[in-house]
Image (cartoon, rainbow, N blue to C red; front, side):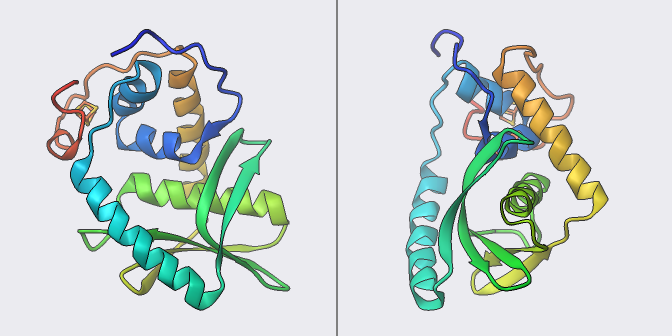
Length: 182
Ligand code: SF4
Protein backbone atom coordinates (compact mmCIF):
# COMPACT_ATOMS: atom_id res chain seq x y z
CA UNK A 1 0.00 0.00 0.00
CA UNK A 2 1.18 3.53 -0.70
CA UNK A 3 0.68 6.71 1.29
CA UNK A 4 -2.64 8.49 1.42
CA UNK A 5 -3.75 10.16 -1.81
CA UNK A 6 -3.78 13.97 -2.08
CA UNK A 7 -5.97 14.08 -5.24
CA UNK A 8 -8.87 16.49 -5.43
CA UNK A 9 -12.23 14.74 -5.61
CA UNK A 10 -14.56 17.48 -6.85
CA UNK A 11 -15.61 15.02 -9.57
CA UNK A 12 -15.58 11.34 -8.70
CA UNK A 13 -16.15 8.33 -10.95
CA UNK A 14 -19.25 6.21 -11.35
CA UNK A 15 -17.07 3.18 -10.57
CA UNK A 16 -16.05 4.78 -7.25
CA UNK A 17 -19.71 4.90 -6.28
CA UNK A 18 -20.21 1.26 -7.31
CA UNK A 19 -17.22 0.22 -5.20
CA UNK A 20 -18.53 2.24 -2.24
CA UNK A 21 -21.87 0.45 -2.34
CA UNK A 22 -20.19 -2.95 -2.61
CA UNK A 23 -18.00 -2.13 0.40
CA UNK A 24 -16.75 1.31 1.56
CA UNK A 25 -13.52 -0.34 2.64
CA UNK A 26 -12.86 -1.56 -0.90
CA UNK A 27 -13.02 2.03 -2.16
CA UNK A 28 -10.76 3.21 0.66
CA UNK A 29 -8.14 0.49 0.15
CA UNK A 30 -7.89 0.94 -3.61
CA UNK A 31 -8.36 4.66 -4.19
CA UNK A 32 -7.10 6.23 -0.95
CA UNK A 33 -4.36 3.80 0.08
CA UNK A 34 -3.59 2.63 -3.47
CA UNK A 35 -3.92 -1.12 -2.86
CA UNK A 36 -3.61 -3.22 -5.98
CA UNK A 37 -6.91 -4.41 -7.37
CA UNK A 38 -6.17 -8.05 -8.31
CA UNK A 39 -9.22 -9.34 -10.13
CA UNK A 40 -7.94 -11.91 -12.64
CA UNK A 41 -11.24 -13.79 -12.95
CA UNK A 42 -13.23 -10.59 -13.32
CA UNK A 43 -10.75 -9.19 -15.84
CA UNK A 44 -10.92 -12.37 -17.93
CA UNK A 45 -14.73 -12.30 -17.86
CA UNK A 46 -14.63 -8.58 -18.57
CA UNK A 47 -12.65 -9.15 -21.78
CA UNK A 48 -15.31 -11.55 -23.06
CA UNK A 49 -18.06 -9.07 -22.21
CA UNK A 50 -16.05 -6.35 -23.93
CA UNK A 51 -15.92 -8.36 -27.17
CA UNK A 52 -19.65 -9.13 -26.99
CA UNK A 53 -20.37 -5.47 -26.22
CA UNK A 54 -18.34 -4.35 -29.25
CA UNK A 55 -20.36 -6.65 -31.55
CA UNK A 56 -23.64 -5.46 -30.08
CA UNK A 57 -22.71 -1.77 -30.38
CA UNK A 58 -21.62 -2.25 -34.01
CA UNK A 59 -24.91 -4.04 -34.81
CA UNK A 60 -27.30 -1.60 -33.12
CA UNK A 61 -25.57 1.74 -33.57
CA UNK A 62 -25.87 2.43 -29.84
CA UNK A 63 -22.77 4.35 -28.80
CA UNK A 64 -20.55 4.62 -25.75
CA UNK A 65 -21.03 8.02 -24.16
CA UNK A 66 -19.13 10.13 -21.62
CA UNK A 67 -21.46 11.64 -19.04
CA UNK A 68 -20.65 14.19 -16.35
CA UNK A 69 -22.85 15.89 -13.78
CA UNK A 70 -21.93 19.20 -12.20
CA UNK A 71 -24.78 18.81 -9.74
CA UNK A 72 -23.65 15.41 -8.45
CA UNK A 73 -19.94 15.87 -9.19
CA UNK A 74 -19.69 12.49 -10.93
CA UNK A 75 -18.47 11.35 -14.34
CA UNK A 76 -18.32 8.07 -16.22
CA UNK A 77 -18.59 6.38 -19.60
CA UNK A 78 -21.80 4.45 -20.14
CA UNK A 79 -21.60 1.39 -22.42
CA UNK A 80 -24.43 2.42 -24.71
CA UNK A 81 -26.63 5.47 -25.22
CA UNK A 82 -29.37 6.09 -27.76
CA UNK A 83 -31.22 9.41 -28.04
CA UNK A 84 -34.64 9.60 -29.67
CA UNK A 85 -36.93 12.60 -30.08
CA UNK A 86 -38.68 12.13 -26.76
CA UNK A 87 -36.31 10.09 -24.61
CA UNK A 88 -32.86 8.71 -24.00
CA UNK A 89 -32.10 5.02 -23.51
CA UNK A 90 -28.93 3.94 -21.81
CA UNK A 91 -27.48 0.46 -21.56
CA UNK A 92 -24.90 -1.02 -19.24
CA UNK A 93 -23.56 -4.37 -20.45
CA UNK A 94 -22.83 -6.87 -17.67
CA UNK A 95 -21.87 -10.49 -17.30
CA UNK A 96 -23.97 -11.51 -14.32
CA UNK A 97 -23.59 -14.89 -12.68
CA UNK A 98 -26.75 -14.49 -10.56
CA UNK A 99 -30.30 -13.84 -11.78
CA UNK A 100 -30.61 -10.35 -10.31
CA UNK A 101 -28.48 -7.22 -10.04
CA UNK A 102 -26.35 -6.55 -6.98
CA UNK A 103 -27.35 -3.37 -5.14
CA UNK A 104 -24.05 -1.80 -6.22
CA UNK A 105 -24.77 -2.58 -9.88
CA UNK A 106 -28.32 -1.24 -9.66
CA UNK A 107 -27.14 2.03 -8.09
CA UNK A 108 -24.34 2.32 -10.67
CA UNK A 109 -26.84 2.03 -13.53
CA UNK A 110 -29.31 4.42 -11.89
CA UNK A 111 -26.46 6.90 -11.49
CA UNK A 112 -25.75 6.74 -15.23
CA UNK A 113 -29.45 7.42 -15.75
CA UNK A 114 -29.38 10.50 -13.53
CA UNK A 115 -26.28 11.80 -15.33
CA UNK A 116 -28.07 11.34 -18.66
CA UNK A 117 -31.19 13.19 -17.37
CA UNK A 118 -29.03 16.19 -16.51
CA UNK A 119 -27.16 16.06 -19.83
CA UNK A 120 -30.19 15.67 -22.14
CA UNK A 121 -33.08 17.08 -20.07
CA UNK A 122 -35.38 14.30 -21.34
CA UNK A 123 -36.92 11.19 -19.73
CA UNK A 124 -34.31 8.45 -19.47
CA UNK A 125 -34.83 4.70 -19.56
CA UNK A 126 -32.07 2.60 -18.05
CA UNK A 127 -31.37 -1.00 -19.04
CA UNK A 128 -28.78 -3.55 -18.02
CA UNK A 129 -27.97 -5.82 -20.92
CA UNK A 130 -27.17 -9.34 -19.75
CA UNK A 131 -26.42 -12.05 -22.30
CA UNK A 132 -28.81 -10.68 -24.88
CA UNK A 133 -31.69 -9.65 -22.63
CA UNK A 134 -32.41 -6.26 -21.03
CA UNK A 135 -33.28 -5.71 -17.36
CA UNK A 136 -34.98 -2.35 -16.72
CA UNK A 137 -33.77 -0.23 -13.80
CA UNK A 138 -36.53 2.12 -12.62
CA UNK A 139 -35.42 5.57 -11.50
CA UNK A 140 -37.84 5.84 -8.58
CA UNK A 141 -37.40 8.04 -5.50
CA UNK A 142 -35.91 5.23 -3.43
CA UNK A 143 -33.23 4.48 -6.00
CA UNK A 144 -32.43 8.17 -6.49
CA UNK A 145 -31.93 8.59 -2.75
CA UNK A 146 -29.60 5.59 -2.69
CA UNK A 147 -27.60 7.14 -5.51
CA UNK A 148 -27.27 10.54 -3.78
CA UNK A 149 -26.34 8.94 -0.44
CA UNK A 150 -23.74 6.73 -2.13
CA UNK A 151 -22.19 9.63 -4.02
CA UNK A 152 -21.86 11.57 -0.75
CA UNK A 153 -20.43 8.56 1.06
CA UNK A 154 -17.90 7.81 -1.67
CA UNK A 155 -16.77 11.43 -1.81
CA UNK A 156 -16.28 11.53 1.96
CA UNK A 157 -14.03 8.49 1.82
CA UNK A 158 -12.04 9.74 -1.16
CA UNK A 159 -11.42 13.09 0.51
CA UNK A 160 -9.92 11.25 3.49
CA UNK A 161 -12.70 12.31 5.82
CA UNK A 162 -13.68 8.77 6.80
CA UNK A 163 -11.73 5.56 7.37
CA UNK A 164 -14.22 2.69 7.04
CA UNK A 165 -13.91 -0.05 9.62
CA UNK A 166 -14.42 -3.72 8.88
CA UNK A 167 -18.10 -4.59 8.33
CA UNK A 168 -19.96 -6.47 11.05
CA UNK A 169 -20.75 -9.28 8.63
CA UNK A 170 -18.16 -10.49 6.14
CA UNK A 171 -20.53 -12.14 3.64
CA UNK A 172 -19.18 -10.17 0.66
CA UNK A 173 -15.54 -10.80 1.51
CA UNK A 174 -15.39 -14.26 -0.05
CA UNK A 175 -15.81 -12.76 -3.53
CA UNK A 176 -13.78 -9.62 -2.83
CA UNK A 177 -10.39 -9.40 -4.63
CA UNK A 178 -8.98 -7.51 -1.65
CA UNK A 179 -9.71 -10.12 0.98
CA UNK A 180 -6.00 -10.91 1.47
CA UNK A 181 -5.06 -7.24 1.81
CA UNK A 182 -7.98 -6.12 3.95
S1 SF4 B 1 -12.42 -8.05 2.10
FE1 SF4 B 1 -14.48 -7.60 2.84
S2 SF4 B 1 -14.26 -5.83 4.19
FE2 SF4 B 1 -12.40 -5.99 2.98
S3 SF4 B 1 -12.75 -4.65 1.22
FE3 SF4 B 1 -13.38 -6.68 0.62
S4 SF4 B 1 -15.58 -6.80 1.06
FE4 SF4 B 1 -14.72 -5.06 2.17
